Image (cartoon, rainbow, N blue to C red):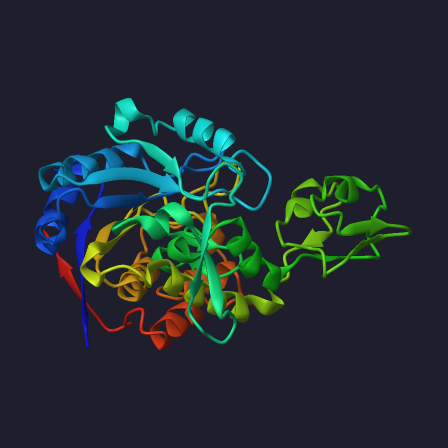
Length: 369
């Protein structure tokens, strides 16, 4: 069965410069508002961006959605979950302060901001899914308790799964800290022993005391949670992501995505992918990134697999504004994510999610004018 994906273009010569206003037309086409009941608690799941990052979604998009929901008399709130790594979104105090700095305030949004897994990421619900990798998954309590979800995803590259969109936003974005550990433990970092300086910086930084240093650093895989803090602090840059298990990581994403919406009515969950400021890696990075290509548009669908597949296809067809990353031997129309991360098959997350009946890769792209 084919899923509908609604699409509005964003171009440099677009007469409608108010890109947030495009959401009105997309929601009109989806009829989502009529699926809601008065006093439904609707979580608008977004990503507030790490400090130092500047390509996170503009809060004006979230405000527009809050305004669109107003006639339905629902209780809308903006939300995200705490991170596993230790920057400025690892607990709710720092996370809310970061959101505030990035414009996600009540005065801008006209809705509260709630960190869905609590102060230290321990507000969780164990959800039974009975799948290959996980029998149960750990979902942020306030996302589980919500009556509906609007999943706002900044579509971009990702160093462990090729690209991140709606599926990853459901999987990692809706998981508690323990849930993130479940997924990240599949891709624990590796160390080049030959080049290690034995400086002990990683040992001192590790929150789980999983690293010991003698003549070189050694990671105890039974203790490592895969937060990857050690990668950031290594002065010799010899601790690397373990991409050997990227296929299994993508499968884990699909299973966690299933768990995040398993208790929701299908017509009360809608996905919006923003193909703007499309960068090589995710907004968890605490530094600026160049755009890979020119902006493309905004997509909306009830199907997370279809919207990610449509986004993936649109990015690979976009030839305008190519970054210098694609200068050497680039072939028009080639898989841009494969070029960025040659050892990762980013389509596995789509295939695994499809197997779990989260959606279909067969979609009808409906352009909204």
